[in-house]
Image (spheres, helix red, strand yellow):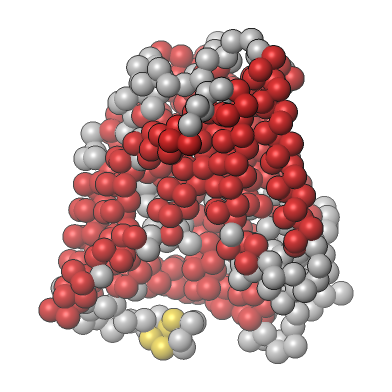
Amino acid sequence: MTENIKQGAIARFLNTVERVGNKLPDPAIIFLFALLLIWVLSWLLSGVSFSAVDPRTDAPIIINNLLTGDALANFLSTMVTTFTGFAPLGVVLVAMMGVGVAEHSGYINTAIKLMLKRTPKALLTPTIILVAIVSHTATDAGYVLVIPLAGVIYYAMGRHPLAGIAAAFAGVSGGFSANFVPSGIDPLLQSFTQSAAQIIQPDMAVNPLNNWFFTSVSSIFIILVGWYITDKIIEPRLKDTKVDGDTDDLPEFDEISKTERKAFYISSLVMLVGVALLVLAAWPSDSALRHEGSLTNFRSPLMQSIVPLIFLLFWIPGAVYGFVAGTFKKTKDMIDAMTKAMTGMSYYLVMVFFCALFVSAFAQSNLGALMAIEGAQLLKALAFPSGVTIVGIIFLTAFVNLFVGSASGKWALLAPIFVPMLMQLGISPDLTQAAYRVGDSSSNIITPLMPYFPLVVVYCQKYVKGTGIGTLIAMMLPFSIAFLIGWTLFLLAYWGLSIPLGLQASYVFPAG
């Protein structure tokens, strides 16, 4: 009885969030209004002197007025390049063309059918979240591959496709700092942590994998919590949400024919050969795919080639499958498949246009930097005990993340304040960075300002036409709250048990 009352209260709250959220204008219009708001705020605050110092320049924060003649002229002259240079745009379009060939040839269809035969229905959710977490290793691959495929897989198994999308989104973005496999984000954050630590100790060295043990164990936490929320909260709430989207082009999950099986094995062998050749090319220490000997550094050609590699590793086996299985009769069929993949991206392109303009203006105004630095200074001035300060860092980061999406950008602002401050309290840079990563991940999935958020809305609209910002936020809010609170407690318990954070990491400064 108590459980039913609790479930009813949660459902009413989420329904209210969805109803209010969906009454907001279209996401593209929201970004347009947000852009106008940034312009006005930049004008109002441009004449105000702030004491906050930008740690990147050691100069006081100045709000740039975006309504001056020069600023508006620059806005118009760079509008096209701001749109075309928006990082997620190229990632999504290039990857989707390769995936389109694999999808419309039938290769993905057969792969999913084989997977469904081997994956127990009860373990589908944790399997999806696990794959989503591991996808971080390939930068943004999870957003363009795992999330849409999760919807297809759930739909094929007779479950609500939006629940699959929610589970994958939670793993890819909400669990962004949880991963068994080291990725490029580790050395990227470490570089800012080390620079900030050297303010106190000039010879301080921080290992790039200083949080690896914690992020690995956190993967188990994210999988278990995400599994419970998906199956016990999200999917039951979706039972009355009708799938009314255009599902005619979704794969049919009938029996696998001998021709399909043969085509799948041949094309998969081609993919494996391609991967083997890539490994051989990257293996030598002086490989052209490395940067100063490192494969995982963000500057390495391998990391910068992830999206083209995704394109090739789906396009080539997809094309092979199509011609072997007979779904492709001529080369134009491949182009038609890529065209169909792009057709579904038209609404996304409109949203991204306004999103790119807003993100650019927000960065140019310096409002995000002011918000982050003032919040950090307030936390510092409160002088809480070390444990409370760690919690404060997590929650402040989660709040700032609603407005400033870049993980490295936020840490570039916050690390020079948080790391030296906590070192003086006897807390190591390793623990401070771990706290930051928890906060940075937890609120990714509920902010429309996250660059891939509009793309996930488009994925949902494929199944439920009326999906809006409110629908997605209401779906993801339980994940976000559980991750923020649960992961914070998890870190505190992890700290209390003195389990190693990572390689050459410590909890105290100076390290004992």
